[in-house]
Picture (cartoon, rainbow, N blue to C red):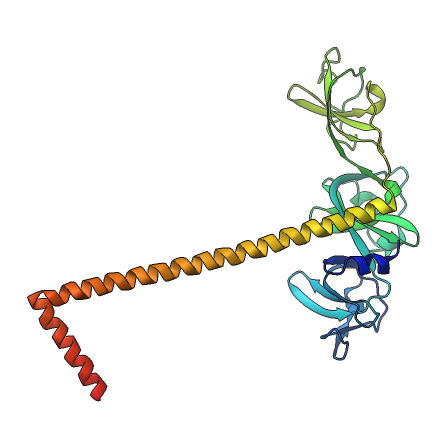
Length: 307
């Protein structure tokens, strides 16, 4: 998939990149690239957000941001555009898995087999590297690895009732690493399938309040999935860009409206307070003792002006 083509179509949207640049690729403080302020290779193998894209001179230059910190303008050469996708809970097929070149570049000392044998893994982006479709895998909020899509199993939410299941081993998790007691389920009664990992042939089933994971081969129901085309990934990316920018715009407008309403309320309160003070002052002037006090204030005020 042509990153330059996607970028030219997505100008006006923010994009994310996995930074992979050679030493000497400069960062500039301006999009005309006249003031050099750093080297983007210092950020290699991290994910940065491009909040603005400029292609006025035929070269696509992006303004990069890390968290809330602006980094500067860069003409990226080898960095990978990350395609937005729905965040999906995933498992890695460890029986087939091979560590990708990208993961080794990120951390060649990490035991990825061990890292993937944990919970709370999610797939957040697609990218393409040397003709291979990859997925960016997170553990919680942190990027863990970049894995070829063929090794990634995606959890699918389901609600399939009255399914017959043969007597089989039931596991507490999708990793099939802890079997539950033999009489945990009543296999003479129907089940509801509530989730699946079709690529791994694993189903999450429910009976009453109890849930567990079983092999798909024991059920009278099979889950079929259709592989996404590159064009579908591109279309979904553009759709998520549009949704994100719309939500961001709505958030900014809402914040500005709230600030405006807050300022207006402050002005109203200040006006009401001024009116109350004026009323108290006029009432004070009308009373005998009050009128004497007002005259004293006025004399002091005039005397202060003379000095």
